[in-house]
Amino acid sequence: MEAKGSAAAGGALTDGMRIEWDVPIAMDDGVVLRADVFRPIDDGEYPVLMSHGPYGKGVTFQDGYPDAWRTMTQDHPDISAGSTNKYACWEVLDPEKWVPHGYVILRVDSRGAGRSPGVLDLFSPRETRDYYECIEWAAVQPWSNGRIGLSGISYYATNQWQVAALRPPHLVAISPWEGFADHYRNWGYQGGIRCTFVDVWFPPQVEGVQHGVGDRGLTNPNTGELAAGPETLSQEDREQNLVDLPASIRAHPLDGKFYEARSTRSSDWANVDVPMLSCSTWGAAGFCANFESFERAASPQKWLEVHGLEHWTHYYTDYGQGLQHRFFDHFLKREDNGWDTEPPVLLQVRHPGDRFVERKEHEWPLARTRWTKFYLDPENLSLGLESASGSVAYEGFGVGVTFRTGPLAEETEITGPLAARLYVSSETTDADLFVVLRVYAPDGSEVTFMGAADPHTPPAQGWLRASHRTLDPKRSAEWRPFQTHDEIRPLTPGNIYELDVEIWPTCVVVPAGYTLALTVRGKDYEYDGPPIPYRLGEMRGCGAFLHNDPEDRPSDIFGGTVTLHADQERQPYVLLPIIPPAE
Image (cartoon, rainbow, N blue to C red; front, side):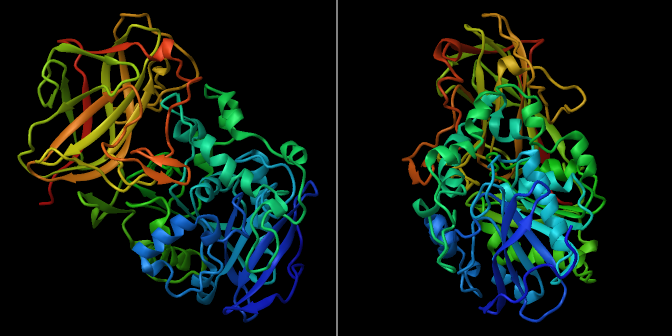
């Protein structure tokens, strides 16, 4: 490790900052990563906020993601206020909103991405080790006070947990926003069904800024340098420096060592012991691990915040920036600002119309939850508090069947994780279940919300491949069934099987007179309206988080008739976390 004083002095003075571009950081195997350093003009030792990832530190938000930037700043003008926005980048902090407050912002292009050479192997142990070394490098620079924090969305949240589990000595605090931790369950194979998100995300967002794209890619408007350069490599050379993540996921349909090496799991959570502000969203898509991090991380000082709207918006609003400023000021600057007295859970409680009411809590799931079973009646397609008997069938690739309550007599809050227990038979050797919690207004129109990845997201969803039904008894709870996903147990056609389906956490306050519904279907949820164009495809209710790989779902196995059963011994239900009104 280099000693203090080893970093290049000087840097360009502009926009109230001292900026150093492409600062070299040597790894233990000789590969040199490149970082941009944004720091206060006055000499001194400052706390450092870092990000480390593959999206290209020289790609501005406006150039790389113009539609998202335009929508976000139009709807939330506070995001662009107070900054030239010249240095805004996708899913990381804007230095102009942090450097004036006495922070150094450090952005590192991970190995094989942007300006950093090497083999690009996402979420790999090598990449995580690089992050560790970058943290320790930053701690001994002349502009650093040795107290390092991490911040970022999605990818930049996920790798915070990974590197925190390695316990870098100078890592003081982390703030992961809307990340995934279990690469099998969160986004590779949701419920054992392959999610094709990685197929549409990887080419533009990763391969598009791989080191060596060079003059075929974007230019950093602040430096005039190639954002994925400086050299332009041949396609053959680039392929040799790239681990094809979509192909790797397709090659590993069951959980195992490949995912274990890239995930934050059991023993890893025991090592995540730094203070943590973990921020999640109700419209999770694949970004639901913040609940898990809050429940399982060993840190004695941890907070969970949950909001709504798009995947990135609140990270940049005054609301989100204010939370992070208070958190990092307390732990990186040691300011006595009262953060340590804040209750550990902050919820933006969701109402129809994407209206939110802030509420502070002390635990997750909420201790006062009334876990309530709503039983499925296959004969009447109703959902109620009394069990029933009967059966109902639907086509394996069809829209399925929907079970509804009557109009609710009073306003009902549902906040927390959910689960469904179903009794299923198939005319083939397998079946994929897509389970959707829905809300309908008195006029019969469906109530949806702005989700992380789609503007018409239902309140909650869950998935399960029937042949993956084996439960892990140590990890499962009544409100969270946890499958092992390490074996395939084919169905005997016609036999009835008990299947427990995890439905990801949600929050919705359903007004009196509205109706709750549960749909069990054979394909992804689709909103009953025209699709909306999107940079990763079309938005029909699930964004790019689809399960439509024909190789993963051959019609002769998954296209047969599926039947849901209920009788005296088999009582299917959905378990809802009902929150009683405040007294």
